[in-house]
Amino acid sequence: MSTRVGVIGLGIMGSGMANNLLAKGHRVSVQNRTAARTERFAAAGATVCCTPSELAASCDVILICVSDTPDVEAVLFGPDGVAAGAAAGSLVVDASTISPDATRDFAARLAGQGVAFLDTPVSGGSEGAVKGTLSIMVGGAAADLERARPVLEAIGARVTHVGPVGAGQTCKLVNQILVVVNMLAVSEALLLAQAGGLDLTKTIAAVESGAAGSWMLSNRGPQVIQRDWRPGFTIDLQQKDLRLVLEAADSLGIPLQATAGVFQLYRTLQSAGLGGEGNHALVKALEALSGTTVGRSGDSADDSRR
Ligand code: NAP
Image (cartoon, rainbow, N blue to C red; front, side, top):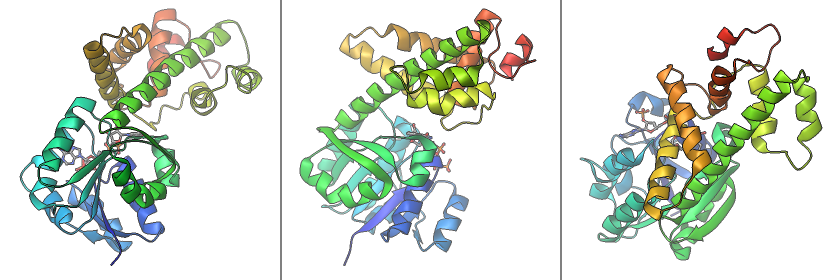
């Protein structure tokens, strides 16, 4: 009989993953804390389970995508958690972005009952989850990755084995430094372009194919110009990741000036009630400091917090 894959967590990312697994012919079970989110997957052919334990008992590969470290712990080891149901020989694959240290602890506890573990955090945003084009950073044993590969290749376009358990999460923290410092550069660049009287769309066109080009500039730059703050990734989740980055840097003794600065800038936006906006709304923190507003002509400085 073919492998059965269980997906726990049907939020923005997990729902895209479950859809792609179903579309590519996998036998899929799903479970979500808020049961209503499972309904459309039942209609698409998935088996719905009531608890992580029930799902784990019937699946060979258990894919988790929930919010933060305590949430993964609750799904794995809480009442009716994965550990209570998983058979020896099954494989847990965690695609959430969480603490590398906690990841190693979770893997060791599962290993005690013969359950294997991979950390597989992803990058590529909600767009990548829907299209099945995520970049996946894998920590764990090579043999476990080969078991999980058909599942990972159904949800991602690039699967990179970066090291032992925990290394995937450390690599994801590296990814998040690059994301936010790049977003800071895009914000400062657009602010100077605005103050200097440049046409912002022409400015992006002029620089994006040269050495200054980036995914953030090409995808989020136009959204900033349009003052479209709908999230691909919210400021609140971005801050969760930056907290993980700064904790890891602290324990490793690495100073991260720019990342720490961006964390404080996002904090001002959370204090203003903007934590649900997209991470490209970082520009609003710089607008508040400079009195200049990027984007649509005719916007006043007061507009910068909309
Ligand atoms: P989301 O839309 O907020 O979904 C969160 C999911 O986790 C929901 O299914 C939620 O269940 C479940 N959950 C949260 N706490 C739980 C708990 N204690 N017990 C059981 N289930 C719990 O978040 P998302 O954007 O999919 O992000 C999920 C993970 O992927 C995060 O670690 C995030 O950092 C990472 N990620 C996100 C993106 C992105 O662009 N969005 C990109 C890369 C990585 P309910 O439905 O009951 O609330």
